[in-house]
Image 1: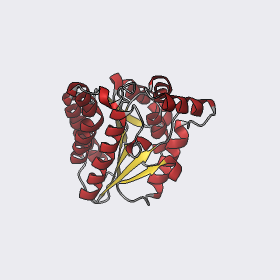
Image 2 (image 1 turned 60 degrees about the vertical axis):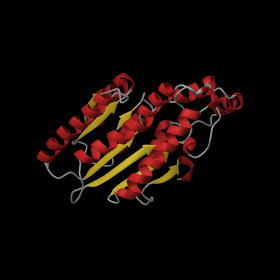
Image 3 (image 1 turned 180 degrees about the vertical axis):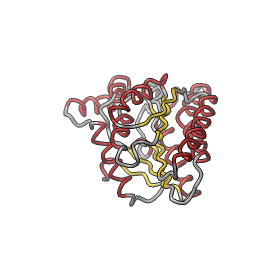
Image 4 (image 1 turned 30 degrees about the vertical axis):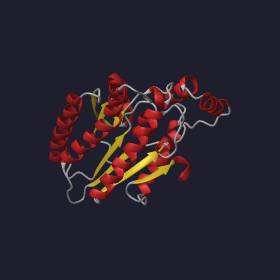
Length: 253
């Protein structure tokens, strides 16, 4: 799992205990200085989970290499313990980008490339590295989840970078589903979660109408608890009836 600040990742880890043997190690790759992965690793004993936490800035090429090496080492450890039954990779690490700007304000290639490097490039390279570290084998179910958004399908004014990144990731993982039929791929949009990102959305969005919309959602109690959304994701994974590569929203389940 790649993580940003705690929220949905923590909830997914709690829920995913039902998917596999709790004694088998999980690799948590933490963005944002590694705080999320470290906190999840600290909580692991209480959850009866074995966790390998890897703080990493996924915008840096050396971090992808470190994740690849850690995944290869983890695979070797697991192979010694017996056949592996399930690989679940959750791509959650992402950032909003500058949501105070309009489209015409993005004239710096460096700013745009920096955003895409973390939000698109790193997700592609990390996923490819993990799948190579855990190749197909009899009895192994490999599942890749991309934490998506309504923004992958619908334009939000002043959210140029975020919408671009989410749309690109959705298509990227659809290509994975088309190329690798043995890998189950899901683009899951978790709905409007009550997280730090939502606070930024209602305070920093350049579009006043959008900012007021998010503020009303908060005031009217319409934001979702991360645990509720993670349970819906778990339901989808356990039932395993979705079309590989599909975009499924919280409200579709």
